[in-house]
Amino acid sequence: MPASLRSDLFTSRRNGPFTSPESATRQSLEMKGGTTFHFVTDGIHAALQRAKDAAKDKDVRIGGGTATIRQYLCARLIDELHLAFRPIVMGSGENLFAGVDLAALGYRCTEHVSTDLAMHVLLKKQI
Image 1: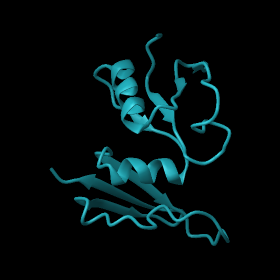
Image 2: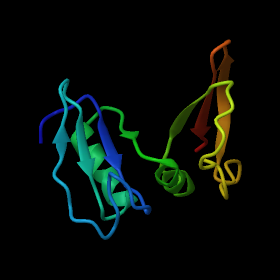
Image 3: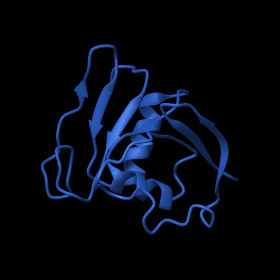
């Protein structure tokens, strides 16, 4: 597998463009610049291990939708989460933290910075 600056894994329980448990396994997709996307359908633990193996000593980033991020948060597999909030009303969408008790899972806000364009919040898992 070619080295990359980061490994993004897409897993989801919803039907979508990336994976679903019923879909056929898709080949990895290498992008210009070295990023490789791996489509993993055998669970978040397997996906994370595959990403760690590919990244070696580099950071691993989890990519995907709300359901994917929620799964990793609830499993306490995310060490650090950077959120950027824009001061706009978007209408509808999925709530990232619906049913997730971040404090009970050991996550704390360790940093926050606001500008006119966005508020950045850093959540870290406390060990």
